[in-house]
Length: 364
Figure 1 (tube, rainbow, N blue to C red):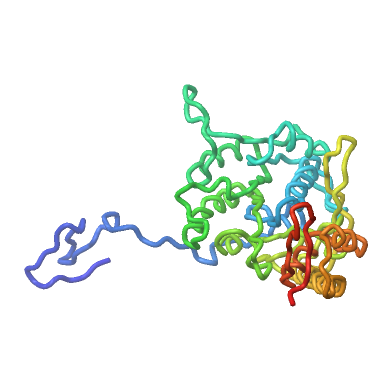
Figure 2: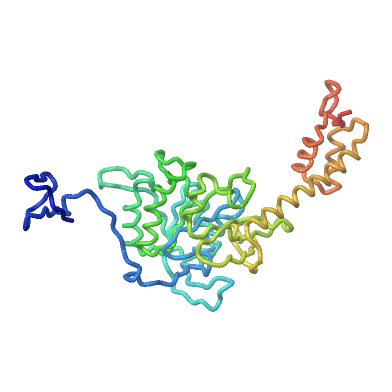
């Protein structure tokens, strides 16, 4: 950068030099500057997949769902396929080499839960790693991993052990106290080095998150800021089949990589020791929003039916709770639905005498 100063006026403190009566500013002395790349210099690449259309390499994928729905079971099934090099049920023609995976998993004991589930899923245990802390020197104790500050060390571990899929379960347990999980900017700053780790090592990072039970749409189901969902390139949801309580789905809940992903149906079977594992059955033409809406409508329909039945059953009389429960069970209503129906109808619950049982009656 150069310019002509007024006659007799000099400029100091900018690292300048004088050449042919012009001031030449030394660029090394300036403040930080924007870096850039031209599109012509960037070679396009095709997306590589761990599981076609569902788990991309070099990117962040989030798998979310309510508690006890099977999110862990899904991840252990994916790990089994990766470590054995076996094709997934919907892409039998895709042959792959066995690869290493790692689990950041702090909620369930490894000996009693994690490893038995991997065995049930038929994983190659020699290719499964569990990083469980960070030891900075030989004379200090290991500390728990905090992804707000320890990602460079985690990247070193990933490279040394050739980890191709890294599961973080659940992601929120590895967020530092300095991160506000409900603030968009704070979450994006937290996720930036994790995304860079995935990109720089071409490792698929699969983060598990819990659902917000009060969410009115699938897009708002992930706990915390919407930035989690927006930064992830693929968002998947584990949900129950509204029509079959024993059937589960792994569903598209927002992919930034192309067309909508077909849902994958599975059931949780048990091995001889009672440990659950996923049995994948078929693809389904459903997404997370459709299943959530169907579940909500199904629950509302059952509730309405139970309310109509309960109002008719009680009529104008006072009925013992024991008799209500017996009749409700015979009709096939769950106790949870019966409780909701009682609340909606604002039924009076009372105990007439010291030795008498509880009764229900409609408000007059």
